[in-house]
Image (cartoon, rainbow, N blue to C red):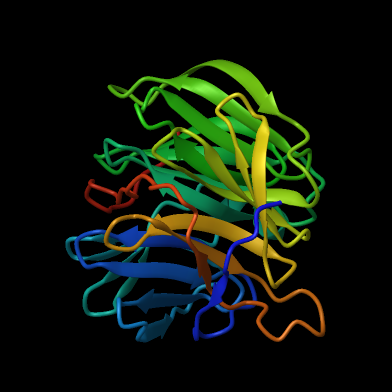
Length: 292
C-alpha cells in the first residue's frame, strides 16, 4: 500500500460519479453523476459548472465541435451548444429496465466505445458497442454483466475491458484501421479487494483501476500483476482519469453508498508519480444509426 496525499476537491457530491475526462484543449475536467443525470465541468481554478439533463441515466459525455456526444439511457445522444438534447441510437432499448448504458471511452482514432450493464448486476446481458466516425453503431460483444474500464495501451495495439462482477480484466489485439478486436485473453481475475470499476493507462503501460467498495485504486502491470495500491478517504471509487496540464495528476470519481462518509461522492486527486495518457474525444459526426 502506497502512502500518498489524497486531495478532496470542493466539488458537488455525486450519488454515482463516473466518466472523468480531461479536456486537453480547454484544460478542463468533465465528469457525470449517473443517477442525477448531471454533467460537471471543472477548470484549473477548480470552478465547477454543472448541467442537469432530462434523461434517466447519463453515463459519459465527450466534448465535440458543436456540443457533447453523450452516452445515456439505452444508447447515445447529443447535447448541442445551445443545450438542445437529441436522443440518437438506443441499441439496448429492447431490454427495457433490465439494462442501461455504463462506462465509455474513445480510441486513439476517435471512435467511441461504450458498454452496458445489467441493472441487477447478475444477468450476463450487457454488451459492448462501438460508434464509428460515420455515426454507425456496432455491437461488438455480448454476455457482459457490468461493462467497465475501457482503455488502450500506449502504443494503441491492445484494448482493455473490465467485466466488473466476475472481476475479470480482458485484453484483445486492437486493429487501429477498423477497430476490430482479436485474440482475446484474460489478464487478471483477482485484482484485489472490492469490485474493479473504471480504468486509465499510464505512459508505462500500467493500468490504474478504481476498486469499488474497497476504497482503493490499484496499479497493475500490463500482465495483470498488482504493483501497488493507494488508500482513499472514501469506500466507493468509481473511475480514474489522468489530467492536469502535464497529465501528472490522477482524478478519482466516487459514489455515495455508505452513511458516515462526509466526502463520498466528491472528486479526489493525487500525484501518481507517473504521467498518464491523454484522453481522446469522439471525432465523428453525431447522428442516429442502427446497431448492427
